[in-house]
Image (cartoon, rainbow, N blue to C red):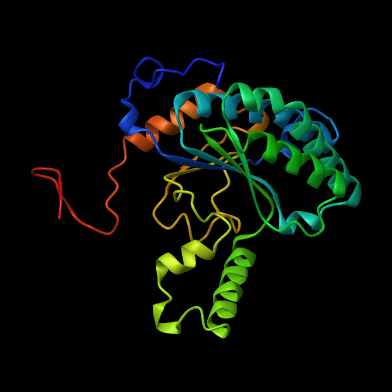
Length: 258
């Protein structure tokens, strides 16, 4: 059972709960720039980023957000210097172990999306332990995109569907959008309503390419280690002020989607 009290979105955001996104996905960018601006090694930016992660995770959970996905480590990130990658992996293992009580206090359920291959045994051990401990929780799903790439995810989904066809479990003509969605790593989770990208970058960087087809994008110049609750609130308010058409037309005279 959660021990942290919920936040009233009307009091905190001036918005009714129905106006909040069900699923927020965040591309956390700017850790290296944050460190460089302060004359620090890049890994110090990643260390300070952990505090931003904790604040945003806790705020989203207490606001009643159904799912929060964090782009934690991409398949492309293996191209970084080995010492930085090794330090990042040590930080992930440390975070997963140190945040278990916070996760339980906020009734959060941990989900990992991405490939397990190449992840160090220490990370997998802490990830599996935290996921198992939290699997009975009923609050927000915290989806960690770790060793993740959207193109690889789609390729894996296509391969899964092809294998089902080869076994006679599925006819090619029955493959539709629902079948593809069900074969993705995110099966069972709602598609993101809001994608936040920090550090002012205007690209999606191979992140949830299928799932964010109709997501609202919010880009902020704030570097991720400096991203705090007010920045999260600003993004949610920005989202709530959008008119989501989903390909339809909004008649201005009566604001009816047709």
